[in-house]
Amino acid sequence: MVQPPLQSHSTEEIENVLIYVCDSLRYDSFPDRVREMGVSGRAIATSTFTATGFSSILTGVYPVTHQVWNFEDSLAERPPLLTWNDQSGIDATRVWRNVDNPAKKPPLRLCGETEETTLAQLESPFTLVVHDRGGHMTYGHSDESEKWSSHEDFFDELARKPGEINRLYNEGVDESVKRFEELVRTLESWNELENTLVVFTSDHGELLGEYGGLYDHGAPIAPELINVPLVFAGAGLPRGERFNGLLSTADIAPTALSAMGSGVSGADGHDLWTNGLPQSRVARTEVWKQTSYSGIEYKAAGVWTSAGGHVRHLNPFQSRLLHLLGVHFYLAPYANIVRRPSRGHIALANAYLRRSVNYGEPLSEALVDDYLVTDFTRREGGNVPPQPDTEQLRQLGYLE
Image 1 (cartoon, rainbow, N blue to C red):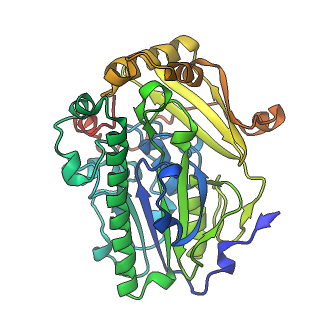
Image 2 (image 1 turned 120 degrees about the horizontal axis):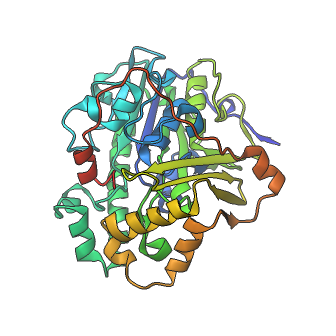
């Protein structure tokens, strides 16, 4: 059974695409007012942090294909979404604010872009990808989050106020959503909304104190980090409708390209515009989180259906244990919370240290064997764009 394609609801020829990536937005924090703007559903993020997940959004392929595992990596070539027309680009003005050189901002750098592009600079037909800070820490709206000089200061002050941390997280999400709504209003004022496919999503979710006090994202693979919202709006699409099956953030690029009339080849995601969504959808997540210390990493792959998921760890137990203790109990800005005795440490140990972890209804071994990918590779050589400023990224909370 297949849900009808989005194209069957559209009333206009699509000339433009606007993709809004609200960083660190988990599905259970998805604002209803965005959900009602179009056709929405729950999507599985292809990874648990920006470098890898954003690359899949732009390319429509899983991490083992595009091979962007860390911020030092980059795509082999500019994604088709950014080469389909002359009016295209990435707007990262509301994130990575400490990185002065646009060419070194990871969203641009990953894709071979050197300059920021905003909606005001574009004329139809256009493709614009907006990467917004969303719910990324330090949590809170912009003025509030800048009260703290560092992420460590934030968690030192609020260590025993989990409710306040959650409130600030939702404030940051709300501010990001208001910026998204302003972009939609601009399209309306230009009379472009009906021929613009508007996409709202996130590159990954966020941990908010689960698993013994973990915050942030990256590891381990867990439902809170991979369940994200996905909305298709504008383009004559109906408001307030739902997808009946599971989505993936890898669906965005093939769907957007199809809406603009481009052929889609080589994508792992589904073309929801032309082909619709199979009800028996299986989605994947792949993470290879490395540190500067040899042998200390987190490497895992997940397979998901609407009912549940299976995560398999791919690096040795000792390596995962060292990653768990070194990152979450020592290096992380929230380490002071994790080090306090907690019943949640049992869930943390299970999520990190067991060879395989099931969430929801267990998946059949045959299905897992068919879909799980365990061969992670790296691409060597080729053109190397400007390297990111690692100290600036560390200050922003993107690196351990």
